Image (cartoon, rainbow, N blue to C red; front, top):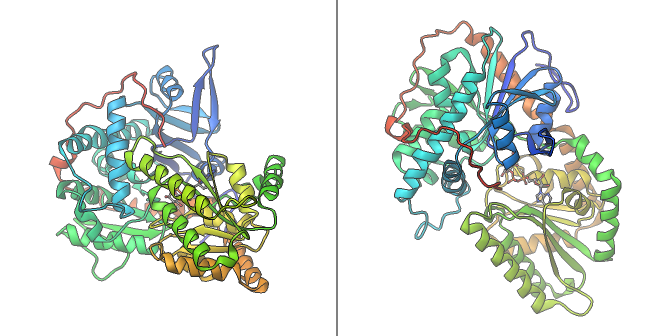
Length: 533
Ligand code: ADQ
């Protein structure tokens, strides 16, 4: 086993692999310039950082959806072919506006996201209608097939190992279509960024959709999850719904129609070096001093989230209100600051959620504020520097999601905080398994418990705060997003060495043909879908 730190260049492989990433959102955004060329903006996400580092030494192809108008124009200008961009190769997939909407705004978000975060109010929602089924066939299946076709067409003739990493719930059917086209000569290893709940949560999906997803994921060699719990839930879900799937007592392996599929945990992390650099930038320092002025001597209770029901922002506010009622001694001495990024505003539930948050915050301010103190401040907007600035200053970081694959805010906060701040962490965030021991942990549904935990944090002796904060910082520093990705590449390479000698006649899994068959051509068009998320 090779040892790396997160800033290494990555492991050296005996045979240089071709690494292919497939994700809805790509690493770059393009905008057309007046002279016909394109401005390229690199995305800030962790995966882009990890891949960027890997691409310095290895061949990396990224296949993603064209999201913006500029992306569409760029893909069209290059006749939808693979292009070299900033040290890696890129292929953008153009789909029609309707197809994209059906894929993204009807099936992936909200249906799958809501199932996997267990957000449905099942006496009322969801209703899976003819429109949903249409979106499944004409949006979700078509898009997934487009991805698999684009990947298959982009693969050169080579005897090098080829590893394909489809990312997340937008691309559940890609492994099936890839295996159908490419057989056993590639390693397929999806990574799921969001939680995988146990079998009960999946009963909401009609059988043929559910089976199509499971059968497709079982066409992979390995499926990566954030935590061992998610991996175990996946094994259980396959056993429960697929009569031919067996685990023979294993918690991390499924045997299905001649294939052995591993379910493995690869907990994602942050780019430690980059986050530390951003924390030191002049722009961030300026924001720190502005925030300090606003907070004064008060204790800062901070949250930093997308506006997203699974993040449980409303119950966080409810707990804050209950704290001010139950422990009046904190009135005027604490400040709640919520930095919220608008997200998926095309989905009704998200618009309603933002409205409810603003109403609740308004009620708290109306009830408790005085001429010197506004108990809650909500800042809506996407400003990463401000988020990192605020994280340096919290006394309490409130991370109380109903369900969360990992939650990177918990890790960023623990890394950059200067005040020995206390992390209040939901037991349903993936981060709980790594950081829970040194955080105050809460059930996201337990308002009373959250109030008591906030009070405990506000009255915690300084040496205990310091001990906890140092332990958290140490844990985050040990991990990192590059290491997260290299671990997946190493596992795939190890397996591909033994796969070379495997029987190449291994059967393609029999999926539920009816649920996977598409009823639309999925041919690219020039229409541009709206930018989402
Ligand atoms: P998300 O649900 O988006 O990611 P999270 O892991 O918290 O959740 O990452 C959000 C990122 O956006 C963080 O880097 C955070 O700092 C930033 N951010 C959030 N609010 C912000 C604000 N108001 N202003 C600026 N920046 C803000 C999904 C899964 C997670 C999983 C990640 C990675 O839902 O569980 O951890 O993918 O796998």
